[in-house]
Length: 281
Image 1 (cartoon, rainbow, N blue to C red):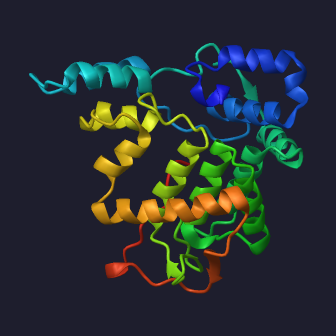
Image 2 (cartoon, rainbow, N blue to C red):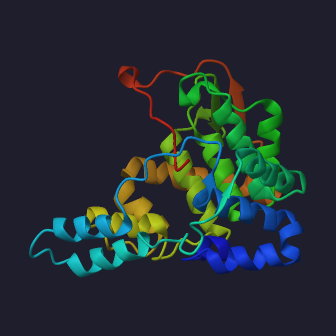
Image 3 (cartoon, one colour):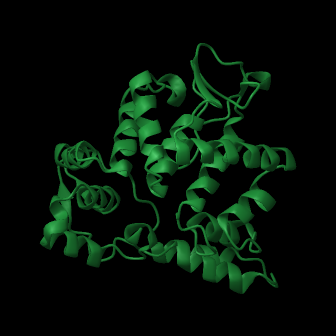
């Protein structure tokens, strides 16, 4: 939670590296996340970084409509979102194998976030040209259920996203009628459930601030508010509430009787257009 709420990783990184936390599963997982965000991976082709933070800030301010009554709110939200959390850590570098080792050690030590992230990476490596071509195995699904049972909010968010994704050969069915879960409503339900368990979902949530900065959607006081009033249709909002109740029971009690993972081809989306992967990668 300290990592999730941090606006700058340097102090947290240096504290963990210098102390006993560096040997704990949680410490290793946070180090993995910081290094993944901030370090140069020496044996990986580096992506083009694009505009600097100052250039993006200048472009954003220049693009704000003249006379926009939300200009002050949008500018404040942009500054909150665009903060450089890696400030002071630009000189970090390591090999991909060392980064992978940190994650594996954290997962093997039982950290729930690391366990979920490791499964996500395994699925990404198993893709065959399309993001939805590699679905979780039965063993991975059971591991995701175990992660969800810890009620760790960050880990639950990753695990829920993986279960909500619309794969070619796997469908999550939900409720007494075992209806196929609608991916977007399902993902929203997992997000709100993570909020219920303590994920930072208030007005300083990154998605809430981004929506204010870039879209002028500045009246949401929390992520659930944003999802309900801005990001979802009434149909999706109603479904997400229904799903959230069932998912909350599964997370709190281990009762997955209202949820089933079904193998086999899923019904194609209308017009053959897929929904795409859900959430951040």
